[in-house]
Length: 258
Image (cartoon, rainbow, N blue to C red; front, side, top):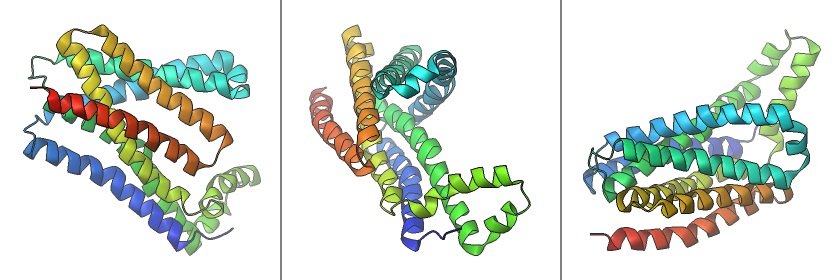
């Protein structure tokens, strides 16, 4: 069994702090500087959990149960499906929640707060918890605790576990920092999409909902496709470029709104 480098472990810690700290910082900013209602962060978080982590996962279970071989054998089809599923579930969820709770002062500031809740809980669950788990496992590896624990398992289980955790010492240290970088731009994208859907609800323009679905699906499609053929750093650069194009346009609309 190898050992996890200190640089990699610092990366896990940094990414954990970003995944937890950035949402909290933005929540405080939205509450104190924008005057947004914190309840909208809760609405965003719950909507993400219900639509992305529950309903979307049910669909994935059904689809991959029926067409798993086709999906796993064709990256292009898998990328299209994954992008559309994420776009439809998350943006329709946003649209439903904003319509359902629009009497609770649905404003551009609260749309921002909604995006913080949506993107924040995603960062905490998907990246934050994974990072702290990786960090704890790395400490167990480096202190020999994991090796002792695995010695009592049967050979098949031990091999499967080793194959899983070996990524912690075989992966380049930069991988553990990229998760934090990705979350910065992923949360920015979620805030932008929240504002677009907010305008769809406020202005009664259903085409803006379809725009949000299309943008979300496109981002996921491109990142999945690029990830299949290029290093992780390239995937992150692609995400950064896309968000760098979308964010200024949305910010201008946000600033121009009375």
